[in-house]
Length: 84
Image (cartoon, rainbow, N blue to C red; front, side, top):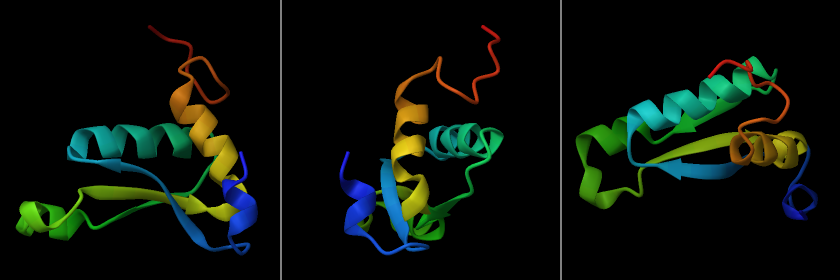
C-alpha cells in the first residue's frame, strides 16, 4: 500500500472512521496492544453534533499506517491475543 509514502514522517493519518465509540476504542486498543500509538479525533464533535460529523477518526503516524491497517483487517495478525 502506498498510503504511508504520501505523508511526511510523524504526520497523523486517518486509517479508519467509526460511528460507534465502542468500535473505535476496540480498534485503538488492538493497535496499542501491538505497540502502535493511535489517536481518536472528533470524539467530542461526534457526541455533540453527530449529523455534521463523519464519526470518529482513528489516526496513526505515517510510519505505522501499513502495519495498523493490516492489524485491523486480519484478526490473526501480530498483536492478537490468540484468545477466542
